[in-house]
Length: 400
Image 1 (spheres, helix red, strand yellow):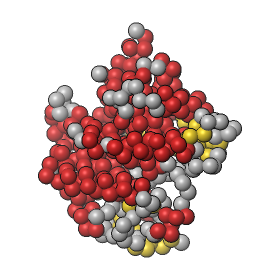
Image 2 (tube, helix red, strand yellow):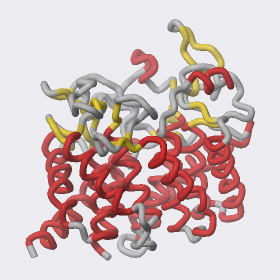
Image 3 (cartoon, helix red, strand yellow):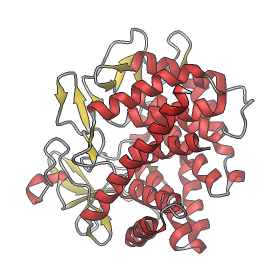
Image 4 (cartoon, one colour):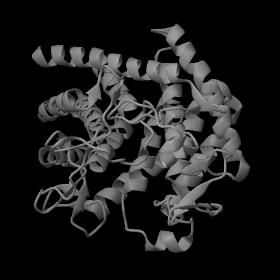
């Protein structure tokens, strides 16, 4: 009974958190041309401006816009029956972003990490902006996030385009499997840079999330890649000695948050297959990640798999919501009560050390000494993606 009561309380708190962030995004309006504006310094709450360089409004991050579009579309669907007025506001706000991203992606079939105000994709080398190399046959995380956002949003704004955006998603998946996916988008896009990159499971982890999206939107027959991705990561990155996933096959470093995220997405894909033989191993990996990763104010960014010692001083905000999602989905799938305590610990860490109720967003990063100016991926704040969609997944599992 105590667990049930706590879960119900948590679901209400997660919903209030999500509504606060979404209302904050709506109130801020767009940067122009439909792009979301979450350009705020999380420590002071002040807006970045033209003097803020790469953090300011002269630059747009493809990751943030794609993630934000997926979040807006998903929450518009979620609130459609319980709060149609709020759902309508989210739907209307996302329309311009959908059109803008669809138009940008249609230019050459790609999305890019960083755009100048005129829409030119750029990278910075030695402090100088240079045009990014046209992607051609290469795909990136920006493609992944944009394809997910466009596919999710097309069901609101342009159902006839859903198959086109699904084909884009399939191109990203194919690029991962045949060696045409570049992780580091701050470098020129090239086969040489792909060949020099480490064997990181990040791309498969991110695209594994597509399986859950496809299941929810009625495309379960398109999720065969997800089983291949799960098998690949478990076969190449699982370290029996530590019980963790090695970020790079054969190396000692563990990105704990990515391992947690992987488990959550795998549970979501396997939610209708409770007898799948991989689920037990995934639960054990998740529990081990949370056992060694939950230290300091939250969850460590990197640690040594062999010793469990920190190899980075940083504790970003996003692993806690991802842990909440993974524990909730894992518990729903297995009923394993061992997942409750680490779920509650991640919940407490996020809402005690990161979530800023007075601001409607979270500190991006902390160290053992407190909030710190460290950008984990982009300076723009989370547009309801890592926090919002993770908490929404937990809400759905609790309310089932």
